Length: 562
Image 1: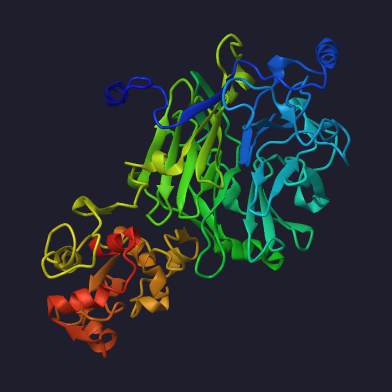
Image 2 (image 1 turned 90 degrees about the horizontal axis):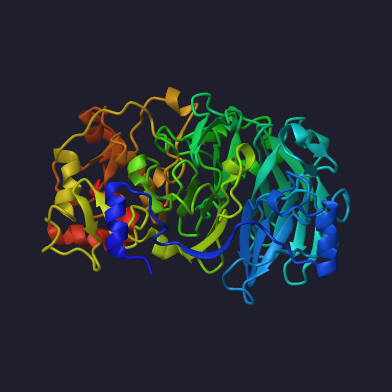
């Protein structure tokens, strides 16, 4: 068992250290597969159809007692590309991989019944496994297109393929390379869309389950950043400067019934987003440029990422391939480095954490595979090269900036959230309550440089918003219902908007009475237009009464304290 003291010291002094929160479940020097008989395995090895050293695991997914592992056919000798581990039978060790759903379904070149190369996959809440077959074997200049790109969906209850859909010719281009899949379930299982990132063809392909049809979006945000193409991983320096849109994940459902798709090019340190309301509408393919958004602040140095996943309560996890780590961000907070945490790091075991998933029980699964060493250099097959870890989500984020269950962040530091409604005895403390709330008015902050987009929680800047002057927000209800009051928080956080109180009154009795407005707005405007008809009070009791019915979420308290 790892020592907490040792981990703390090594983390403090910057030494390499083992994963502290993630628990290693499986590991391999090289992959092995379950063959029907030993004789058939020997024949496969002798014929070159099975070459153990050529197999690299890249994707995982967990559902029930199955832990799926994908193995692309980048080199010869890969007997199956979609496999699984029976976690009920094998709880640890170096298990042989079982072809899913069977050997025939993994046949190379059988475009109707087989699978050629599979990367990242997704199991949905409707009991379906979404598998994109790229139809290729090889990689780079060895690539052969033996079949078209196809979406294959399996019924996990019966382990049978229930749909196969080939992308249209206009959905791809000669450079297309798709390695990521995200599934978006709406009102019911029929109302399902899947999104596929075209890393080298710089596109985003949408597939509608109900319509059984696909379409393609293109945008400049899908392209790599020419300044972020240098990588240092596993002791290697190399350049992946052409790598565009790669990692994707979906936010929880918003108040409008849609989600936000977060995405990032691989050669980039920046995050982008778009509402699924846009992606689901085929008619917006050629008319959606200004509906895509970018976050003005980068993640920070050495923050390339290929995989991310978001929980239903808004905790995003993402791999940090340069740092041998898994990062986190709570999507209710502004997208800035100070709101990004590291849930675990291992300079040996997490060299290239290729995929990260959260299952139906809120357990996190991570696979590491030393991919750059496999592709550019060589692997030492006497050493452990591939590992799969797991841990409960709450354990991973505990104590990080992403854990906002019991803590909030404010200009006064980290403070415990009130367990009961405010009262006269605590409203005037520096940490919480009226004193901190009023400090927004008594201590003006810097003038804004940019306009924060007001359309949804933490929505970043878009190309059009930069040209729009700051305007007062006369009522919070103009941009959000009361249940989503935390949407205002990023405006305050970014020092762009003040909370202004009516005239000379101390505070207000109505939940929506505080006015969020640009600092440049003349005070006369507030007196003449904004505060007309607003109910005011100057008693502490009235302030407590005014806010007691508001949701006491961490995001709401953060709103008040900033």
